[in-house]
Image (cartoon, rainbow, N blue to C red; front, side, top):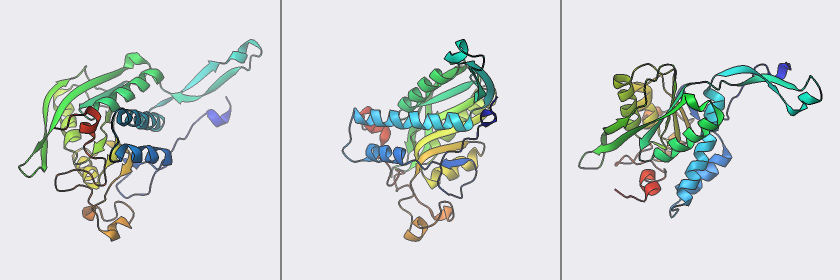
Length: 270
């Protein structure tokens, strides 16, 4: 084996922050360009779905490379017919890693399907599963989010020793993701090996909520939005003044954000 392939170190480019080691706000100009287009006023279908799918393919590739276990492999190349040295040996992804992708209706359905399809291409499809949960925001008379109601769940079995992926585009208040994880904790057999949230945009409020309720969760996001923070906070390293950072308006929508992405993806504005 060539020593350069014995142990591959993969570290995605990230912004500096002080939210803790389990939070990864990625620094990718291509993704930020595509996310800017997706967020832009006036963008409609089919471009919304196309851009969202592209962003999640990129994000799923990053999570696979950074978070999934490796194993040593040996592969005969086409040169094996010409020389016995036509064998590549090195470290690659562990193809038999048990993985569960959680589809959260409605905004999470397309991201989950994109992630699930990629995993089936890369890993052993027999070890990849997709679960479905139907959740809806609960709000008070002023429109503020007070919780998330789980209407239905289709869970394909235990999650013991699985990597649990939650592709939910907008990490706003954290109520949806925390409700989903509470359901797995209470109603699904086994404990996941690792839980990874995969988001387009997150807020400081979201990071605080999931960090307090599910500190074991790892978060990946293309962008951190804290647009309602004061100018001095916006000039600081994210997380420095966490309790003064604000990314949600009074109705718990992200600012600058992307609007109600679940509504835009489905052309259903309710």
